[in-house]
Length: 291
Image (tube, rainbow, N blue to C red; front, side, top):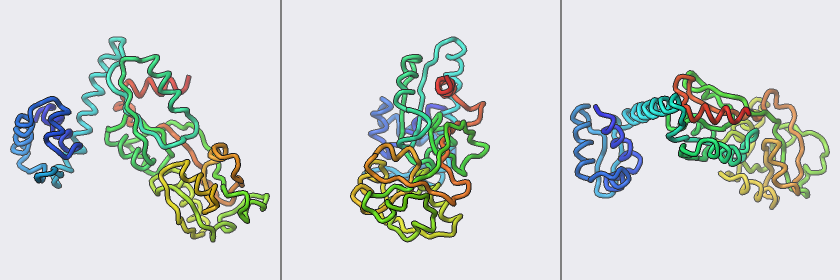
């Protein structure tokens, strides 16, 4: 099994198409097909189900994909480590982040990183904390800025960025706006909620806090965008429980503390693989973060 074959396999799995993968890899389609067939013969299993429009992974293909991505990430890290020893940081920094993460100004950090390491290609992916943790563990991302999740394991380590309480946001004309005091889950359990997809960090914190309080709530309006959530609250279509720093994005909304949630706080971290698997670029970014 050759690294080239694994690169070919991962490209076809990502594009779900031989022609597009061949164009991206700058190889002939016939050569790419031959490479995949040779890999299938060696493994004695079909890796793709081929149709006229696209290809999909078989069960064997799905099992190989996770390992292939991890192997290629380790090879890339080895090349970058040698370059770093020689005094030049090269390669790729693959970074993931949730929207509006607290404790780090991502754009400013990446700008500073590019000025210091111009030979490193930066790739950025935005997603929920659950997906980001999985991608760091699988080697598809070098690190991610996310909410600390239960997914932390021997495949992940974390560097704490900041921690903050959760806040109830509502329209100034909403009945809760005049409360003037901290609210509990029992106070707001019967309201209509605007919230994020369950994979997002703020949603996970809120779900856990209300479950711990034994309070059921209805998320009627689910979004994947911070400003979309704020727009819905601003139109008085529901209330939201969000990290405290969100209140500064829409000063016209009423913000009230949420109490009675025990240890439920929104802690953001930099998620990284184990020390020995951390790329030089990721180490350099963490160093810059702490400067």
